[in-house]
Amino acid sequence: MINLLIFGPPGAGKGTQAAFVAQKYNLKHISSGELLRQEAKDGEFKDEVAKYLDAGHLVPDELITKIIKDELEDTDKKQGVLLDGYPRTIKQAEFLDSLLKDNNRQLNLVINLELEDDIAISRIMSRGENSGRADDRSEIIKKRFHIYHQETEPLLNYYKNQKKLKHVNGRPDVEAVKKELEETIEKLLNK
Ligand code: ADP
Image 1 (cartoon, rainbow, N blue to C red):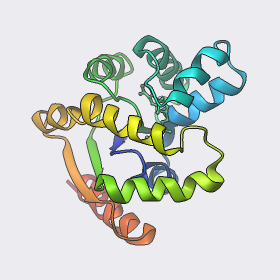
Image 2: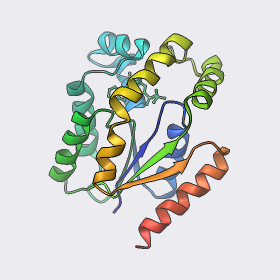
Image 3: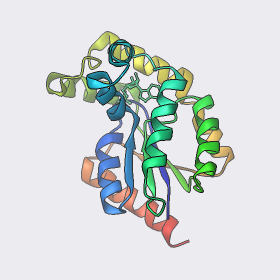
């Protein structure tokens, strides 16, 4: 069983690539953003969650952590997972390590999907026209990048120290990135 994490700035293509990888390797795709957008639609704390999402702020650690914990506990013990969008802070990463341990899992690989801010921003802006996401607007996008660099990017060092980090260039077209990801994962499987 493998458990993977896909990492990268907003707009790097994590969602698209994660869906592909999850299907190809039969992993359960756990997307924090999707789970939170669902929560904002019909969850117990929907108004509160929507406020954070629409402002481009991170939701409080306890809230997202509880959602991820429930998802992991609901996953078939024999199925690997692909985490997308969680963790986003060092605190979340530390919690995840213990949560995975409690579930007899460990992260095998963290893939950093790299993309420069200006390209990522222009991708989100063009997606914004039809994504219907309230956070795909320019002031909010700026905020999300600021938070990414402040809070989330330091995780790269965290996983580098754990020797789990691999980089994949997110700039080429979707098919080329898929291929690169497959090669990275195949190397892990053949080890
Ligand atoms: P993107 O990475 O492209 O901004 P996501 O769908 O991953 O999009 O996340 C959308 C929003 O969901 C974030 O801006 C944040 O408000 C919230 N969110 C997602 N994951 C987390 C997390 N791990 N911790 C806190 N907030 C989160």
